[in-house]
Amino acid sequence: MKDILASAEELPRGIDQNLAGCHICGKASPTSLEHCPRCGSHLHLRKPHSIQRTLALLAAAAIFYIPANLLPIMTIVEVGEVTKATIIEGMINFWKAGAYPIAIVIFTASILIPLLKIIALCWLCAAASGRLHPSPKALSRIYLITELLGRWSMVDIFVVGILVALAQLGNYMTVTIGPGALAFGCVVIVTMFSAMSFDPRLLWDRMLAEQSQSSNHPQPLERTDPNS
Amino acid sequence: MPVPEGTAARCKRCDAVLFQNRPASLRRATAFAITALILLVLVHFFPFLTMDAAGMRRTLNLTSATIALMDQGSVLVGLGVGLFTVVMPMIMASGLIFVCGPLIFGRIAPGAFTVARWLSRMEPWNMIEVFVLAVLVSLLKIAKVADVHFGIGFYLFCILMLCMAAAVSGIDRDELWDRLEVARGKK
Picture (spheres, rainbow over the protein chains, first blue to last red):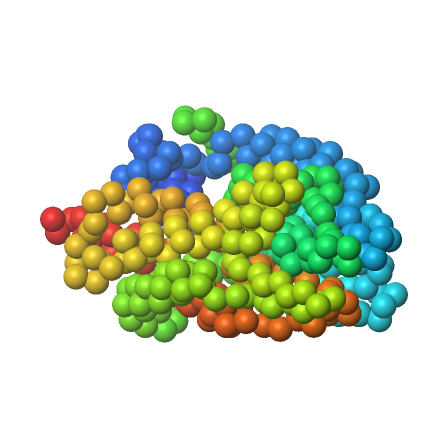
């Protein structure tokens, strides 16, 4: 932890030199500009209202998460026998049938990843607003992982789509989509947007701000973004 | 600080990869994107999966999941599936060709900057590889009630997945923007 802090202190920051990194193309430009001179997107020092947006989208995701898990994502009619399966029931059925690898894939993609993503983003927001003090390096890595893994949760929706298309065998077997699928799709999409609106640089800002507070060297670390 | 071809620079703070200088980046990205686009068209003409059960045969195409979901009244879910598996890959591949192709000859296509900006926003919504996983999971799910066979479409789609990954990661974003900027300066 110490060497990270030391190296972070030595490194010059764009924010101290009035340079803003473009969120899209990465070019550093003077903060006085409104648009990136290279790619033309809006220029901000940090993503505007990052924590607020992330938390708002997370709240939406948490709400969608409830019907996504309680309502069936599909209804299977097999030789007259009707089974309404939620995500968890589907996973348990696989496990009971001895199909452990798929059970683990489904558990990871549809239960673990969305849940961990919501928790991780809450934690990141808490750290960025100074309520928690873990290592920013570990946090940045968590952020990268949540951003990478999020899309894989969509696998369940695709499975429902494929089964609905494939298993239409009249009286023998039919599969229809349940209301849980839409809710689950919303969870995935909303958490993806939530992760995108989080700005990991806020974690480093917070760390440097606390560092300068403890060493009694008041530095002008937090500047207001003229564009937000 | 120059980054030699085939190596990468990392962030001193969080260790994430900052910049990668990939060999023959523009040509590679364009070539793979063209292949991906051709496969994206071809894939519609071959069955993905064929299922035999109870004396009936059903085949699945890339778009049949979307169509079946919309038929059942789940328009939103159906459109979502279609968007992530058909439309987004199409836009990604053609967008990459549009931006990278002319750059090989040091030119920029009209509106290339806007297209490149949208491409970087769209990248996470292109879910080809997730769909491949979904095909495998559903296969295992119905293997016990029916005979399921992979069709040519599925193999094409797997190649498409690899081509798409190669095209998207063929060129580093920073390098692409640098090249676009240089090409604009020359004009």
